[in-house]
Image (tube, rainbow, N blue to C red; front, side, top):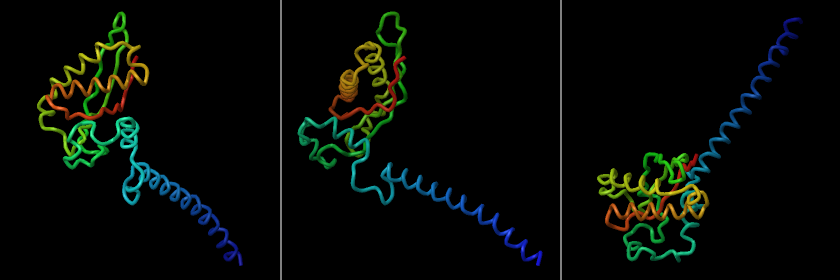
Length: 183
């Protein structure tokens, strides 16, 4: 009889270990599904726009959507410019600002959206000239000019203009900051 009483006592610790393991597995699975949903991957890919597309739609809000850049929308890039192809990530820029004494500096990392299916080949060949023009632009700015959202939007427009100047064509469509630090 003592052996029969010992068996249920041994099974109780096994069951108590099983419940937390199942619970932690459910939490991990829920976290993975939430990450897939946020990234729009797998069965969650359709429907709502991704974060980058939604940001681009907000920035283009007042332009009427269909022809800001002439006949380029008819080239099969998706019409209104919501495409995700043609994004070029640049290495971080670190530049002293034009403030008194040069004590403030800017660290900026961003992507340039060309709106097409691929990055123009000329961009890769002209990357040193592009970086030079952009560094010159950043060092001409003061903290007061770039600290506001309006100042950052103006800086985006100037970056697009400089990139298009290097390419001799209106290929760059948008700039997305992924890091913007002033110290």
